[in-house]
Amino acid sequence: MTYNILLTSYALSTIASLAMLVVSIYARSAPKSLYFSVLILAIFIFNIGYVFEVTATSLKTAFIATQVQYCGGPFIAPLVLLFVCEYCGIKIRMRSILLLLVIPAATCLLVLTWPLNGIFYTSVEFLSDSPVQRLVLQHSIYYYINQVYNVILPLTADVILIYNFFQRDKVFKKQSVMIILATVLPLLCIVFIRIVGAVGLDYDPTPIFLGLTCLLLGFSFLKFGLYRVAPIAREQIVESMSDGFVIIDNQGNFIDANIAAKRILPQLAMASAGIKMSEIEEIAWLSENDDSRDNEFSISEPDGSNKHYKLSETQIFKENRVIGRCIMFFDITNTKKLLDEVSLLAELDTLTGLMNRRSFFNNAEHLLEKLIESGDSACMMMMDVDFFKGVNDTYGHPKGDEVLKAIAEVLSSRLRNTDLIARYGGEEFCAFLPNITEQSAIYIAEQLRKRAQELVFSANESTFSITISIGLAFYDPSRHLTLDPFLSDADVALYDAKRSGRNMIRVMKQTEDFKWC
Image (cartoon, rainbow, N blue to C red):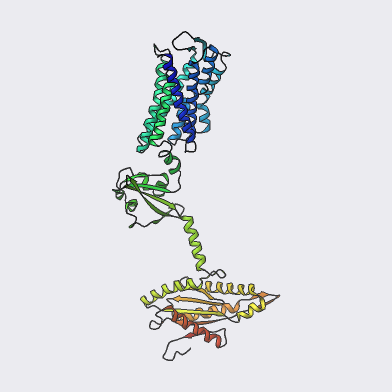
């Protein structure tokens, strides 16, 4: 190879590495691009050193060019390994990274401090009368140790790529083939030129092969979207997601799932690509279309708690044709918990903790519907604190609130879990007691009246007591077809109790004359 051709080849290789360096800097914000960028930088430094060497006119300038080469060259092999590990999602500890860089750093230091040491080179000679001006270097044993090291690391990287090749998607396979080709070229150069020693070559083709490496990586970047598509997105983004996703093709075959999905639905971990989702009973429902599938589901955790998830489905297109579906699982446990809390607050009276009027009506209507179907007995109970306005006027509204909360506690402690209890408004309370006889309802009402009368409140260094009036109405299937007349009858009975002197119970019984008893 003539001098001009060699110089042109070195220059083109340097330009290729420079162009790829610019591209890597441009893509520096992409996931996992750090080692890739540093690798291209090391290749560029190595190549530009060779350009300076073949243009040198003296031993001194030629050796300075060699020193420039070794500021980048020794680091190429470990950076290839680090780049591939990062690309495949293999985490490497900082201690391991530092160990990988010990030999390259030592090599760089030995070259930079020559001739103070003769550990890497034993002698250096400059040939200016040969077709290609170059250095003739006599190597020590350490040189060959370094070259073997430079072979082992890229080989390890290629083994990692080949191992992952059979476990990843098509995009990864295309990218990994390009990366393997990009690393094999300089690897062969090291083995057959630098270690074995090829006869008849008066130049080092390593920079040319490294230039081809940059071109192959550049082609992979442009053609296959290196650092813009899976596996980078999958390993760093998708696999680290707390939300799960499952990919299914148009035939209902399982294609892929991330770690989160396999954690949420362990059966996915046992599914292999291509298997019919319908063959796995526990997750067969995922293969149903969006219209027929429930888009929320719950999972019981080992600690007894429930996790709630919402499904979202997206169609996957290729050339305007649907080829599959991506189903996402979103953890809505906290959201559902907050919504339940908000819903609960919307249904409760904030002062007493009982149902509010709106919530009582909603629940009582459903209870009455069941009552109409079954024909069972029931009682509607309306209660009112006697002379409550006087309590507020005499002792203040905070004391009035204390009275209302005490009455609510009496109702909650004396009534059954199946009974609906509500603060109906102001100082008025309401209770719907299903499946109860008249005798039992009257007995409970009397217990409530007595317990309320026993309450004692302190205010302004004095004490006071309160009483309540209660009106009862019992379910009549011919009259109580809706909730309003049932409540109205109990309210009429309450009004009669207050009109008759308060602190008493009145029951409305339906006869022809609606008499009281």
